[in-house]
Image (cartoon, rainbow, N blue to C red; front, top):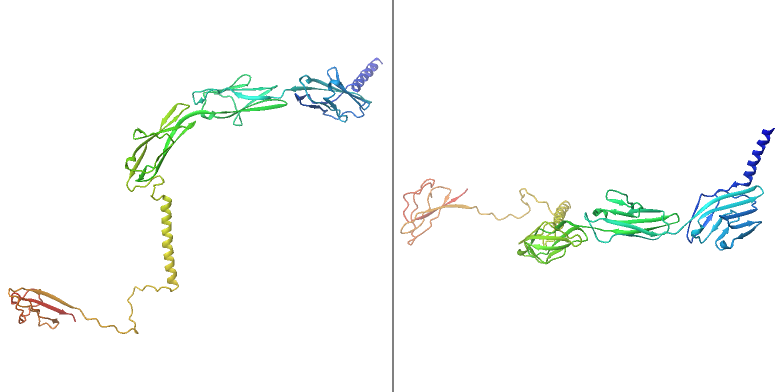
Length: 439
């Protein structure tokens, strides 16, 4: 009997506690910014048929809602409102002293409902900046110390470089509070945009700093023709890898020219321009210089520019190719035209055979047969005449040719065979001829 009474008493206490203190669910906490606003809203629906609603901040209450009537304390009259449907409290124009614990109590016919939450008011982050770089940074010689500062309640800090996280390494070292970073000795790849972001739950702000690493000059090169003809314009261009951009000086055959630009120009070449050209690059920040390899230039008569440059009258590779293509096209066109005219019989075909006689053509005049003469002579002091030899042969026509002062006809000499030798019987001073007629 006593056990039963004790059991009934425990059950009654649990029931009364459940009815009197049922829980209202809120987020664990809310965040707000100074001058901003916040709304305390339940995670679950509020009780229905609410009779009394109380919002308290610590001991004092902010507002009450009873029998449909809303009452707001004078200190919150312009800063607090209540949504009578969701029972959410909205605070505006927040102040630092609004940070704390807030309680909602609701009473209806079923019992009493309670819920707790908290508010943290932050000052907005402002005036964020990166500082620390005073002197120019020189590659392998300088150390970059960068500090990030800002105002407001700062709860986190993030470093970036060129929109990528800046991570610690042997050369990148962060301070214990993460407000500064040391980079060194710097190298040229450390150049870029550094970013620092300061944040809290209600605001954030990013500062940027462009970091320049000075280096060089190195990789100095001269670009230009090495062989040109007389009277041409020539430009030699000097380049170098350098930050800031390098300055240049030129020497010709060891003599300072007074040219201090990256381009050395000769308007009209002559033989005296042949020689060695030297370009020196200089960095005024790093105080370093590096001489290029010398550049040889040869000026010769009738020479043309090499390296594809403008030879001042010489043909470029492209022009030569164009001429060759044009000639080939012209030849192909002529051949094609000849083939076309031949096939269309607009020009006759050339016959390489023996031309046949034209029966209808009038007979041509008979050409005389050629007579061949073999002439030899033996001069006589008197110089009477020329006697033909071998006059007895039937195929031989002969004539007597008179020669000398007396020019008297003489009797023909005796035949002398095949005229292999001069007959001994011919008188001296006689010139003779034998005219051969071929049958």
